[in-house]
Length: 385
Image (cartoon, rainbow, N blue to C red; front, top):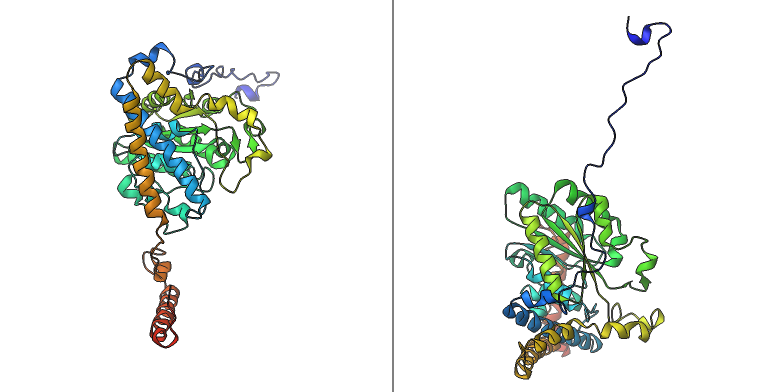
């Protein structure tokens, strides 16, 4: 007879062991204030050569943004989401990676794509409305620009997980805006990355707005970096206009992931100086008085002040950086002002690895129509464009 079957005996199971968290949350919590380097004693420990390189990249990035915005106004780009004021995030993200690593950008991150080595015209091809991605993702180790919010994040986790299973020395860095953190893909990506300890770094550029929606209407969390704790990964909070602080934090997170330490969520606190895109009227939801304090915290000016204060940059050096930036802008103007040479048959290229019967029939029909127009040209004086 068991204890349960004995008359008059109450069943008192042994108490379960006390529940304890599987992970100590304290090391995962971000600092109370964004991490900064420029303007502090820590800045003097940064190599002069790195500071000059970062400065040149920021100056070029600012000119790139200005030129792309102008080209949009001239109708040479269909749309351009500017990163003016966010150049530090873009430059630091590209420079934190090794050649074998992968970058997963959002639609706003064309400057990061350029900073990683892609031709500026190729980086802007998608925003011109021409020819797919514009660059070869496999060649540059950069995923296509992603317009749907946050859908690139699970892709980054999948690639990083696959690389780790294959034994490849690869880290993925995925970029997203504060608005993207409200999407389900963001949460799913962080959860999978933490469970798998995938070698991936998430960079959230908190630029204040998801189009017209301010951050306060998206989340009640103390910071976006705090969201990392719920998934079991460290959260880092960094001044998104301090390119040296970003470079340090992202490099550390990338190498931590490479060494098997798992993912990190980095929140860069920055500001979107321009409108969401050329189609947006930012004056409807924010005032000039809100923008002005951020102009005083400009990423280019912050680094320039550090360099000149330490005697590492003179007017000749600044002029050389501006000249290199202007050379890039001039090349962008010349090549993007040229009309694209389009082949209508390209409509059927790269749709499927093996074209379907329907696509082959449609392509044959189009070729026949084009041939008929060419044969008719001498008689009508028409010209096929």
